[in-house]
Length: 316
Image (tube, rainbow, N blue to C red; front, side):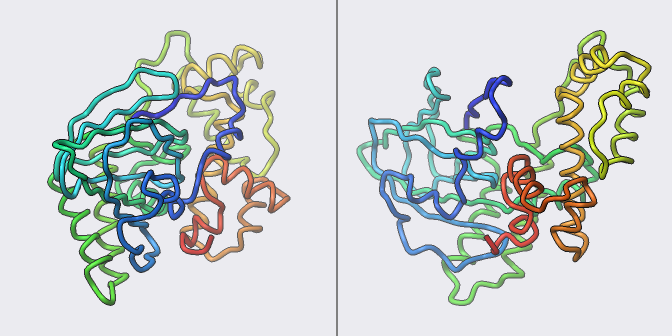
């Protein structure tokens, strides 16, 4: 599915109001409710089932914090998607086809069912903790959360099998096994990270910060996550003026030094939330935030959910 790109001149925090909890997505679908009562709550996933008919007027699909998977269960349709004000992109889908998106911005959709029939789809949202654990298990270390390439009308036997197993367990069992749901969801997360993770930025521009200087600066950032950001100290470590350091650093990483520093703070906070029982306040202080509310605000802006919800997806 298409992701709506935001101009870098726009404030990052402006995206927060456009995100919704996964549990609320059904309110934005044209049917107004899932096709059947929502399945028993699972800690790691949210699953919705829908039966759709053709819609001519596009709907605005809000972004959610969790990666979204949509699979066609019955029927077929021509689905169109676009970023706001962009050109429509058309995909013909049938049973077993899936969509994947982890966009932080809303987008528009409309669809025409084949032969006038309705078609059934399932939405599955994976908790961000599953994605982070999968990335950690696969040895992927990076500043910021894992992002995925957009898939529209894809076919993948593993995705189809795991989604069908999750649907069967959550909707077909009187007492769904949380252990089985977690295992299936984690297997799905690992497969998605292995197969559909967005590649890191390639083609580093000329005149970017040299690799050995970049390593030196990032190491320095990691050593001082609890301290205030200091552009002058980093520039001095790179033996450059602040202006040239900022420009070359962004060419090398795609982020400003201050934003990269925040991403490193959030990466450390995510690790502590998953691997320790320390309080959110203590973790916030370790990564440089004396105010719990400020830490929560920045964490939500960068990760998509609050620290407490990240540690326990069923809490918020």
